[in-house]
Image 1 (cartoon, helix red, strand yellow):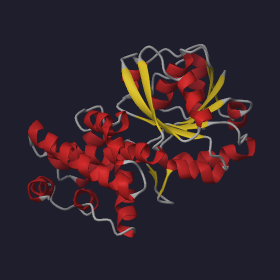
Image 2 (spheres, rainbow, N blue to C red; image 1 turned 180 degrees about the horizontal axis):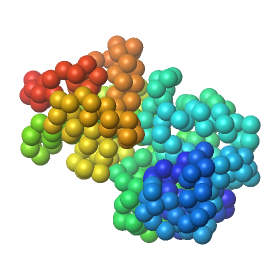
Image 3 (cartoon, one colour; image 1 turned 180 degrees about the vertical axis):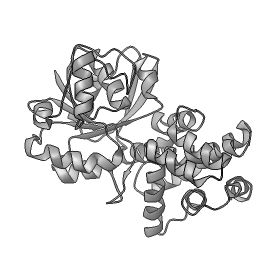
Image 4 (cartoon, rainbow, N blue to C red; image 1 turned 45 degrees about the horizontal axis):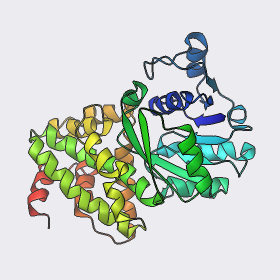
Length: 324
């Protein structure tokens, strides 16, 4: 089966690695000639993820070549690029082809879920989303990992379940495509907060306090925005939250640690320039989305004020005690 992957980041490569284990023919799209040349010369992309890529994987800068006559498309780019890649795909895309979104975040410009962006631009309802507690390097190293898959399209769900799971990768289905995406996006914001607490010198006990409190807030956000609050108990919810909020592998956690441990704004800005910190952009988006809908989530407001308005990071720990 021909399966297309839009993007060649670390997570894209990890998903492609899993897809290739099922003897699928994987076509990956990149806009970077540098990445294409590295792959053509070495059959690896060690600068992105240090694994040996399957012979079933092809990389191209032609989006037409990548998605033409494909049976399934995985979109795995930073959330802010999803609309642009969909517009690039549109003239070659067959509306009957299922799409699975593995990107995590909320569209910054339109303040919409990524599934809404894909549906509106490509005029299709054959959409699924996957999210869960998986770092790219762990998936690539064939560690046992799990993802939640959300879809209202039986055709799309079944194709993802046919192509992606294997003896080291488990998928658990749900129809709550809204909740899955909100969990995958907001956990990055909470990971920044967890990093801030660690940077301030607080213990694992205080970080666990934060994680537990955030579960209630995320559950409320899911409810207010039309999803199923029970999704917080899925792999995309508590599973991903625990992983991202406790590991130095998380760029969101590391970014928060920098905020908590230093007052040097230049170091913080430099980190943002050199790393894609999805939670930084999601924080601004979810804060304004909630504000526009007159939904008050105090934890999100405090994190926003610390990150964007440079308020004292110690306000975060104080909130945990006073929060109702």
